[in-house]
Length: 117
Length: 110
Image (cartoon, rainbow over all chains, first blue to last red; front, top):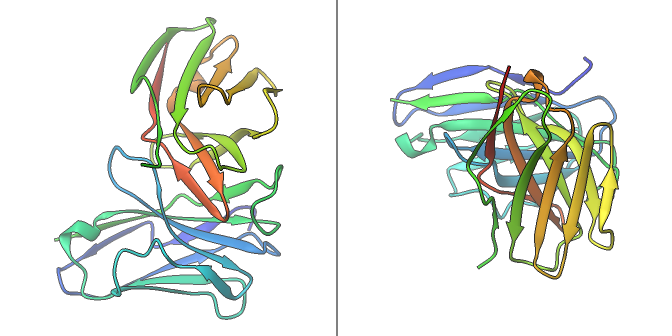
């Protein structure tokens, strides 16, 4: 596709349920990021991949959050035993080059809005 | 602490006027800064970036100014149009992370 694609667009989960959020980055993009955006707030960093290597996962809020990018393209963010505070928009972004580098634009997907009830 | 914040959470401007959105940051060890525009229900969209060793950078209808002395960043939008209505974030880039501020909501009055 022409841009970063995320699915599903909306997800409602019951508390305690596991969820998996998918990100299809732009083809050939080396860098992939996951961000969490609470309502009315700026996005908060979760994790960063360079190809299949997860170089930074320090933003993951707990061990219930797990991300993978096994073949260096599609990535999945998994949240186990979801809690109400996990409700947010989860944004994925990809970039052609490794970060950081000026003029290396990161393209964001539309996000997955997760609501935990 | 380390933070990227915005002076004004909301801004309303008349169509055709110039807009100025401000951003303060507290960590001087950043690599560069990016301004993003986010429309409702969409992901952030890149507007313009500036390296930490630059003072000014211009794009199409937009100019970013960086004042490292006071750790201040601004985005100027010339001849603001209704399509410019959105939330604007400044993001500070350090290592492999974007640090986003809370955002400023810009409303353009026709």
